Length: 275
Image (cartoon, rainbow, N blue to C red; front, side, top):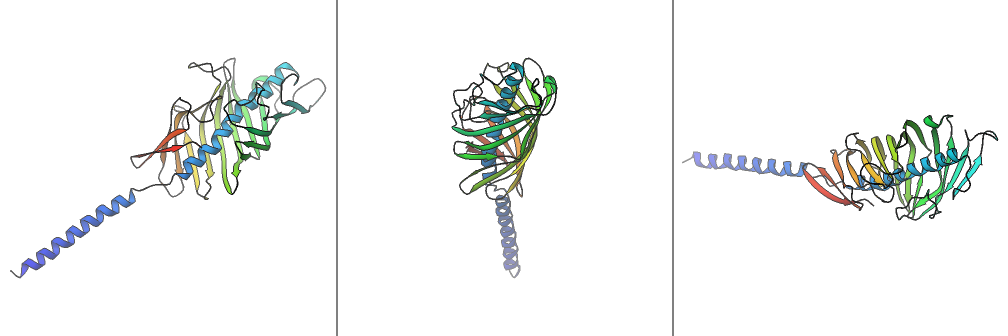
């Protein structure tokens, strides 16, 4: 009889440890950091929209040999009187009627400043900067955006794109972003439809509005897909890791243009808006 209290005490301790272990496991599984995926989408979608506009405006000027009658595009300087190489161009992005514009419904103001620094049509290098650039009330900037030709043919142009110190800001909210990616421009659409589209894969990193650093990775087999007429990334998967948190897998959908996406972490799937 004297052992019964001891047995009850031991069983009580075992049960306490068991439930404490369950509670600890459940707490460790909680990961509700969503700001990094939202801020990533806000900044990356605009820079993906800028790439085909840079390509089309500069290439059209080069092939026609003149900026007139290309609306919104001006020649700032030219190396010599008989060549377009090393020329600097300025494109007014607020001219929404221009065929070089971004027809995705966003209101934009400001300019793209672009310089050619390589002397072959099949091996162009373009350095672009943003001047007083805004999209839907958000200010975007960068030290430079460098496009270097990888593949050039009649169907598509593929570039290595290096974004240096990219950022966006609205009010007190500031997001930092930089990437080194392969971005392919299909100006007349791909095998799926005739809507101009870009494909992107590679690595990126940034800092969200609360100061949390994050890194991203997109593999070539599941690239990000953004159509020119869509304001959002509309297809593809990627991995994003906020500092101090576990990686989350982002799924942008199956090609339908909407502001919906999901991310999965710790076997939990969370829906979020791409804006």
